[in-house]
Image (cartoon, rainbow, N blue to C red; front, side, top):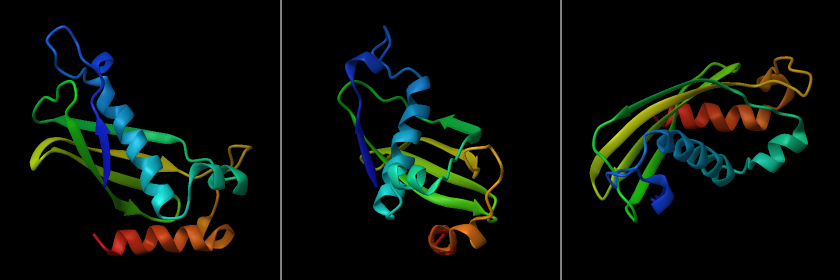
Length: 134
């Protein structure tokens, strides 16, 4: 679980969080998720793994406001060794305020696809295990 505190600059004139910030929070939560699983972005980059975003989907349920604590659950929704889809569920206390997904692939510095199972079996196995837990 990752927790983000809504900042004043993230809100609009109506004191509601601007919709674009939820996408940023998904990114923050993804970075935190990978770090907690032993694969921080620094390690991924050192290993030569780049994970561009292929797609984003975000569905807003209820607003958040300045100083709210938003808890974000991240889970592996789909993984086939080449593409990864992460699922996000955002809560204030126990109320679901937003949910979404981000799609990613894995490439090297030249932009060529990486076969994780062969080239990075530890990373592959971690993602496989996370998928099985869902």
